[in-house]
Length: 101
Picture (cartoon, rainbow, N blue to C red):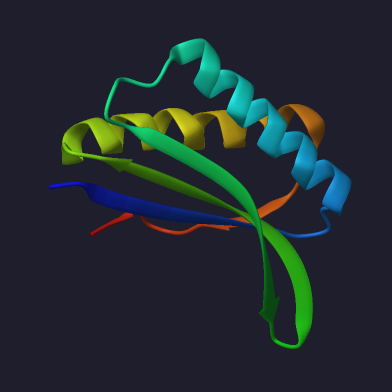
């Protein structure tokens, strides 16, 4: 049975262009690492509101049959998000816990 994971990352003071840049870098990293057959990774922009202030975030969604492999792929994506943020001075607010259902 296919499992689906979801992890959200919220950003402070990030523009739509910088979020798009982070997403494209994550997607290129995923292509470099390779995704095993039966697994699929979606990375897309999310807009949220917190205390009346809107911001942007990223959602990493992974589908596949094995929970451990999903966790491994998720860690690679999260590591890349943090690396990009650190290198390019993008302030991230929080990384939500991984949710697999």
